[in-house]
Image (tube, rainbow, N blue to C red; front, side, top):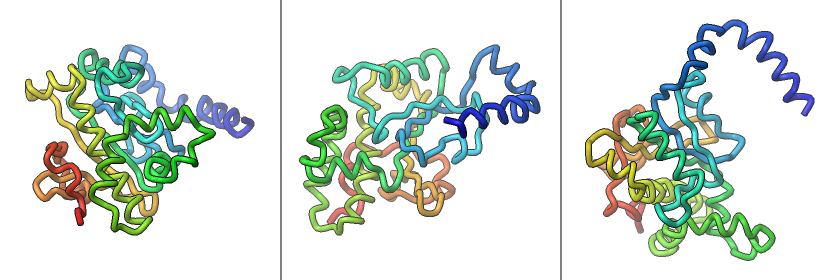
Length: 224
């Protein structure tokens, strides 16, 4: 805690004082560029990754960057998504997974490992589609490749869950919303985006405007 408190002192005496104009604008309201849905993992920092300032990202985080399908768990995730679209009029939603994700490792690991984590086990049921895709298409992969692929497939599966939310579906039909599927690499800082044209994740710089996957492409990444 001492480190955190020292950080607050440095923020107040240094950062805040030098950016008073920015923070004064933020007092009047927010107008973020995108809703960024990602994992709670402490190694993932959306603002650092995208080099954005306060007020530029509306961020939703949870274990495994999951989006419960509409009607199954209409809690904080549903409220944040609805608010982002209807109140903040956000036009872009980024769903970003990351390598070495503990939630995804648990999803495809031994169920016994979650025996003492019943809340985690219950939460991961919102990734059941991902688990089944992995079981159906990727039995022959090595442990490392399987973990990497699970992260990618989960991003795509959660995009499909996102589409079930009424606010998302309505905005998509109006042509007022774009969905982006990203994976962040802890190893090298790279970000890949799903390119629906080739059905693969490619460097985000090669597909800066790439939108979400079609339903018929789920389970097709490195399919064997």
